[in-house]
Image 1 (cartoon, rainbow, N blue to C red):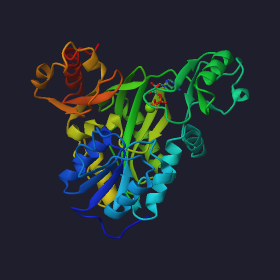
Image 2 (image 1 turned 180 degrees about the horizontal axis):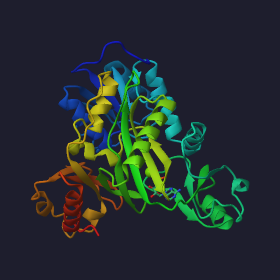
Image 3 (image 1 turned 180 degrees about the vertical axis):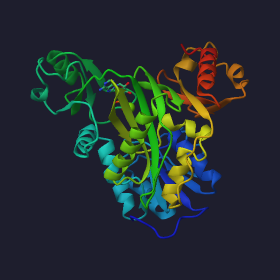
Length: 383
Ligand code: ADP
Ligand code: MG
């Protein structure tokens, strides 16, 4: 079903495929507004499942579970880009689905994603599509030094290898079992930034603020908002993200990652869902990215996205637990800070690199927020 005339009102049951932390925040936002939520996720300990009205603990393509969703929910969304696009397409025959299976197909497959960005004339760095050995350029190519990235299922820097020659690229391709890849030129980065936006069923767009992102080992570590990029660059990023959403005819919440390299802006990748770098909106924006997701799905007008405080978000990875001498990190020390907003996802097992939670420090002044966040980070033993 493509559009509705009347919005879905509480206590309508909404569905979501995926039960990670993004799904958990969706459940929280939906509950706050009075909606009910069914979560589909095979993990019995899923962070969103624990909070949902109904947790269907089944595979994402389980036909009986999908049928329960079509019978009990009026609309369905997703929280992770590797969701089965076929499942979303199946659901769309019976109930309202956003984002569309088509948008998800593009965002989850780097080959289609790069091709779409290029055809839409959005600025992207040099890349090659690698389907077989012979697609790997010779040493004389200006693509080196580059990053070979698997075209599907990569996340948090996984499935990526830095290569400086044809030989290294061939070896890395072999390591990835010769699955489809893209080879990107490594851009010298001035800064990484992202922008989260929501586009509703009528095509109205609300953008959140540009977030400056610091990655460590390929994983988002810290987000600083407002970003310290120039207002000209921030304006351009807003414009690019909007035209991207329009070109994709996207409906839902969209995260767009950008590189700023030697003063120029490049689109890195897109996420067809709320984005980790948009978590600051929970504590620092009038409406947060998850409420926007609920609003789009329900066919309500988008909320105001104005930033009311500066914010610095710090991700808490499993390392904070595994490096701690105690079973739990020393929460007491950081929870004393009145400007800190703590969000723990209730994941049962802490593993290095696994996103277990985040905190956001809000302040009128972004430099003060940053300084406080760095001090609190140290108290938790993060280097
Ligand atoms: P993921 O899906 O894992 O987020 P990305 O393509 O965003 O994959 O890459 C993860 C990180 O690796 C980026 O945020 C950036 O720090 C670095 N990176 C990726 N591609 C490039 C590139 N072409 N040039 C420079 N750095 C890059
Ligand atoms: Mg990324």
